[in-house]
Length: 156
Ligand code: DQA
Image (tube, rainbow, N blue to C red; front, side, top):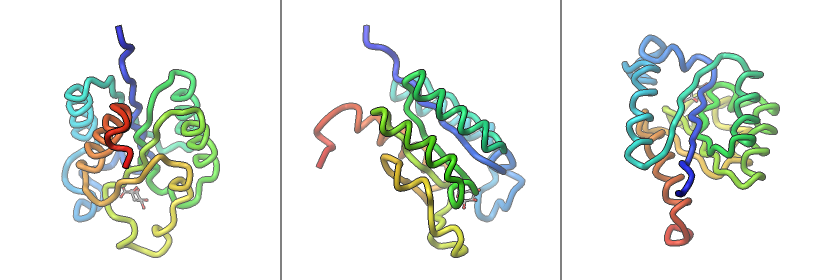
């Protein structure tokens, strides 16, 4: 039997406040809504998806280590850590250099926002980045993982 594909969907600071936080940017739906959506999309793709959120940098670093140890691919919304956390970048690099996929996602498009959001310290070690599609960014990330894993047809 082929082993199940595990995907950790990791979310950084303030994303637990979805629904309350700047809804004009991040939408009216909550983190629980997001977790339910990614769980459903994961099931459709045959993935075991687990969505988590923390405001704590050390916690996300630990989860990235866990992804390496459990051979889980990662969808990562590093939130504000995107822009300055070299600890997160170094942990994300361990994921991709170990042969796992890590897709960086953002609900908003940081490039259309304040200048400090234009640079991601994570992008350089991610498999790819998807930004600006709200919750759909996560769906696109899961689809991208499925596409990559299903082989060479998409490798163009
Ligand atoms: C975000 C964009 C970041 O700049 C911001 O700090 C966030 C959320 C997004 O999903 O659009 O917290 O990662």
